[in-house]
Amino acid sequence: MTRSAKASPLQNPTRPILALGLEGSANKLGIGIVEHAPDGTSTIRSNVRQTYITPPGEGFLPRDTAAHHREWILNVVRRSVQAAGVKLEEIDCICYTKGPGMGAPLQSVAIVARTLSLLYGKPLVGVNHCVGHIEIARLITHADNPVVLYVSGGNTQVIAYSRQRYRIFGETLDIAVGNCLDRFARVVGLSNDPSPGYNIEQEAKRGKRLLPLPYATKGMDLSLSGILGSIEAYTYDKRYRTDGSSAKDSEGFSDDESFTSADLCFSLQETIFSMLVEITERAMAHVGSKQVLIVGGVGCNERLQQMMDIMAKERGGSMFATDERFCIDNGIMIAQAGLLGFRMGQVTPLEKSTCTQRQALQQLHASLALHLYSLLRFRTDEVHVAWRA
Image (cartoon, rainbow, N blue to C red; front, side):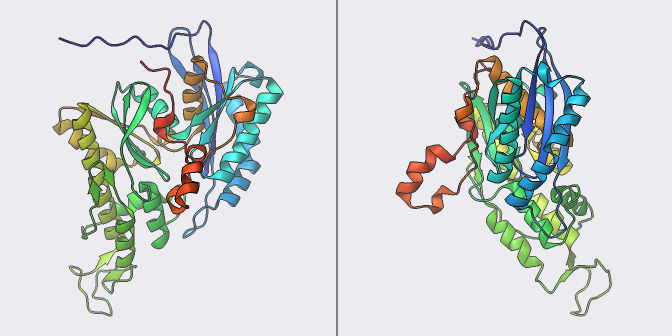
């Protein structure tokens, strides 16, 4: 007996409606405008982004990132509105990233969202950053009901939809995949332009040696702090060559014994991505899904997509992913998720238009952590996905 599909609770609008999305949870400042039409189609009207790039070897601090967003946000809003060919008066709702993310950048963008809401008399919609990634990827790829691998600088989760929630089946137990890659890029002095993760991907293509690294999957969870410590330790090894020369070095190591930063980047990617494929496959088997959708900034890594595609095809399934326009943090993902919620009556009152950055509550006193837990976290599985059956 086949189970009939439930009807979508999301009704088509009676007229075209527009949403402006503002994203600034990390070093990407993005503003996008999406339109939902009466025939059920969605159109990306604009998707403008400005990235805060630091010198090689440096990360981006919350204070400096917030200053960048404050400097550029009016310019980016103006460019986005012009590209969309609309006026702010025509926008139906203002959507902003409520969290999770870096506190100061989130707050800087939220202030502008509130100001626009008050100036133009438009309702506010606070959006979960992770759900934004999922919804824009679903729109672009037309994936039906996939297991989602969410991999970015601040998050690593394996997710599946059930009963109007994006349920987390597995996640990192310590640091995120993107954070691990970015930190190692700083160790070996790779550029942050256009992003450290992209430059690790390019460097890895020149790698020839697969060096042993810790492999830490635990059910559908994984741990990455140990692998980061181990890969950093290789840079202090006497066999490590920074110049990539082929002759014997001063220590007398030959090509077969020595290794380069390209080898380290290659080894790091292969090991981490193998772990991600394993936990994703386990989740697919658990829920009986034949589809996997990769979202988040690390999701545009071609090697990760290739490995995941092989696994999915071996299971008789399919792999879906988007390019850097939609994988990397952007405003259109906030507009899309926010407009879906808005059409279901989800609006954020001005007095509740706060931001929620994820806190390391496990480091606090147990009683204080328990008290703050519901106030500070904003996990993917806490969002009511009212627009899905």
